[in-house]
Image (cartoon, rainbow, N blue to C red; front, side, top):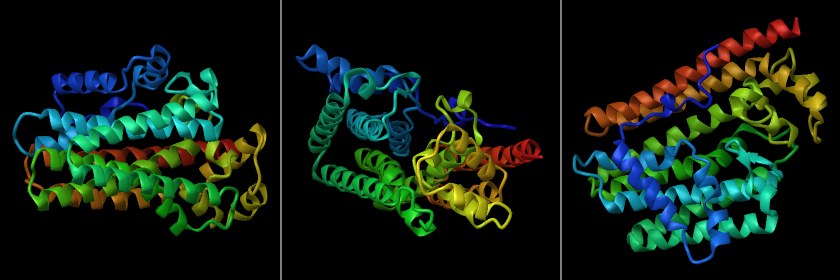
Length: 342
């Protein structure tokens, strides 16, 4: 089974190492202040690393202008990444997580209150940067934050609801994930003074790519191993977050009734593993991968409406590569889990 869960190559974008270094330094500088304790907490996940895919999208979008990456574009990427980091701080409190990016989570190390306030601090820094970049970007970031909150509330309200429909799921991930991906691309276009049609196509690419990205994550939560994920698989199932592969599995005549009887309440380790095996061996995995492929095609079309040069082609290839990797992983996982069940 080909499964690039944490592989940086899958998400590699044509951003110069020097520009990535500028981004990292600016990211750290943006949260440094006079309080050593707050500095330590605020930089905890920054120091842990990560793909930086959202700011990389910002910088890649800015490269479409065919000029050097400006300080404005760097700051735009930082503002987006700070929002993402803040969401991780808050999510870990809600999920009672103890690990994040292979390090101790902020809430586990310093407590929920510190984690929440530190997340708010990152959001404040992001808003400060966005305000300095002008009213359009400040307004964009504010509306994106509102969408993130709407997506989170929708997910919380649907917890343990076996009857959750696909429309609700897609709406939630559009707000929780695609919104920030879309904003990352749009900010890159705005800070590099790209044409309005170019900005709109970048925005469309980011929205569709964000949907693809989240569906991929939700499939991997079912089919990947703990070693590949860096956390126990099936966490969403255990916590009552019934994602697209689970929804499609519930409609599978072979496993749907049995699976439905297991869900609707928190799952212990053994129940979680059994439910995960049912979903992984169902039609739900392949069907979710096909939905992801549809979003990849939308993202590819939006990328190719750009200038047709190497940057737009790389964005198109990124969407296609992620979808292909997921489809291959889904095919391999189904065979593997069917053998286990047999």
